[in-house]
Image (cartoon, rainbow, N blue to C red; front, side, top):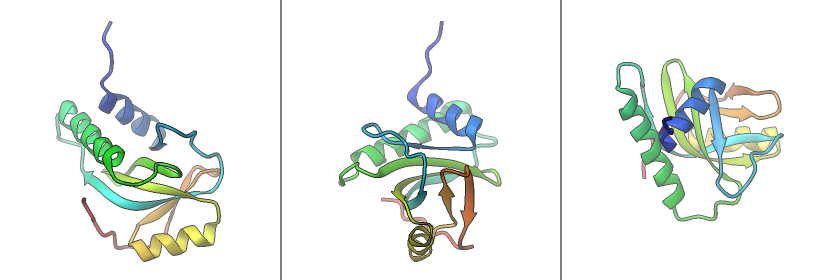
Length: 131
């Protein structure tokens, strides 16, 4: 029997569901929107060894966990779009208009509508702000 690494488990969740929002101290909300705060990594997993993909996901999660803020309403986010894997710190926002305004101000591509399980694209430009 083999066990999965943390990076493998997160990647499997992203791959099976198209994305994930994870917080070690809170349940993922069932309503509202996820809005990116800070890009941790983005890359094309195709052509990379699985171990490299898992390592990058684990490293991004470590950045999230070690970032200096209260984890309340802050989630490790991962999603696949057009062959790119985006890993970021995101926050939960209940109101759609507030979420869109925050995303535009931060240069985010999209927000994630939790209840409807879909991305809402808000801008064409994404700023990469690696810590």
